[in-house]
Image (cartoon, rainbow, N blue to C red; front, side):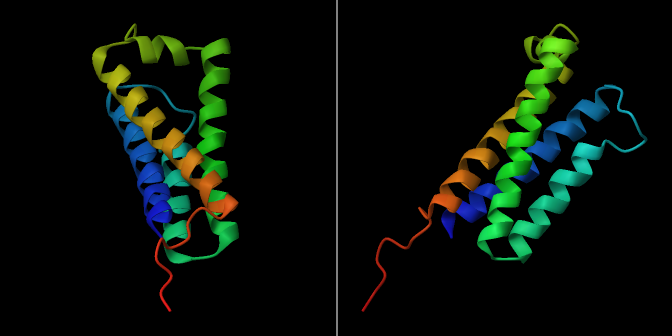
Length: 123
């Protein structure tokens, strides 16, 4: 149960990072950043559907955004955002996003491995 809460928090924090990037003036392909919507819907799915597959979806979403960041760093401005070359507010948003989605990816993987067992199952 604890890892699921961490997974949901990671997705929400990742979405908050995207919101900071958006507020800082980073351009997105459409009016509302798709990643913001996707991560929030994923957080709602994980919180509302307590099944193993939903944990996998949440972890995958975190991993998907991490891979997207790495690819944007190689081909675009992802690393510049992280290093503050596009402003401190952009760097803050990128850091918050990465902390959230890395947390989501790791906690999702742990949930899929079955490490979300109670420490004291009782009689």
